Length: 118
Length: 118
Length: 118
Length: 118
Image (tube, rainbow over all chains, first blue to last red; front, side, top):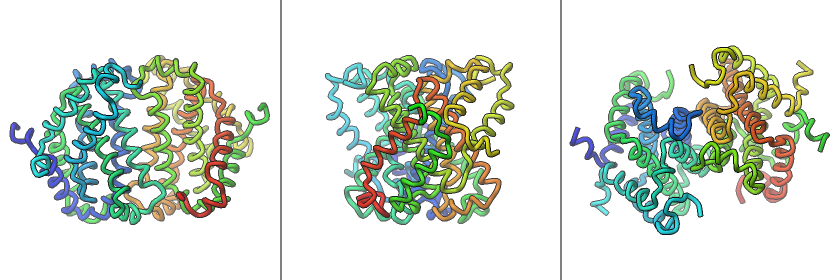
């Protein structure tokens, strides 16, 4: 377990690449369709929270069945993101770190403390 | 650069957690709203491929401006996924590896080779 | 105004058809891409409510600028639905009435009164 | 059949309103959750076209089972749009006609003929 927690993004991306190649699914995993797949899985994740309040959404964590469903849907989103990164050679780790830096400038901590919009 | 490629998921998740905490955005980053955010960002990613053929989607990679846009949108999706994982204590790496194992059983390589549906 | 409120779905669909034909956009308005467009517009609508509570979402109605934005995004979703119906010859009115009938059976009023899930 | 094709948007919206009221679902049908519902249904529609080319998407029309599925998913999107309009008193017909007028100005037919982007 400990070892796994320490998997890098690129190790996980290699796992996904192997899965896709073993099935010869590269033709399906073109950027347009994977982006569709990410949307589809993101909505399946969202559906778990539909009709619930924000507080009820937090409470779902205590339900092991629901928690597992959330885990599975978020994993689906991530797996497609890794596959998209594989298909067009994006360095995801750098993309994430760069976006975080850009967000830090866009939302200065002092101005946005406690509020999502100015 | 080399070091960064080797960031683990949990290191990236910590970066996102710090970003959220510095802005006191924990109240916004409840599971329901983050799931909405993932959907919103996934659709912004999809919009980049709208009205394009699957081949044209691949060709966008050669356009550095478009490529950067794709990188930024996929990073947004991932950042929200990391934040959702932080907010309800999901071990993303294990969730991904477990889902890949389950997908391997659901889609046996021999039967699904070259086709997405049986 | 009164006259317009009484437009039928098929009259609105004809308006959308004319708009698409005048721009020779039939090739773009294939079912796959319009379905993507519906997703994209649905997410732009959702984005208006992001980070807000369910009560705050209701309060946005009193803000004429926000109200207009909601109107515009929901109109975009509907226009793409009408265009998809045009492109593959769906009788939307019948599809809606038939789905409502099916929902009435799936969610009997007595059992589901006041709750979204059993 | 003929009569139904001529249902107005407001007649359909009344049908949806009755369905919601009979189940006392007004609390669920707040703008935030309905917007989530529209996203979820839009993605279920999109999923029908996933991994298919734009041409294959057109060919699905000839498969009565697939055609029915498309009809049902697009109806779900429309029903939620009608419900959102009911919940915050949007005149959908006017919203659609106004958005079409605005789109005509944004995309002049001469400039955009045959192309989605300039």
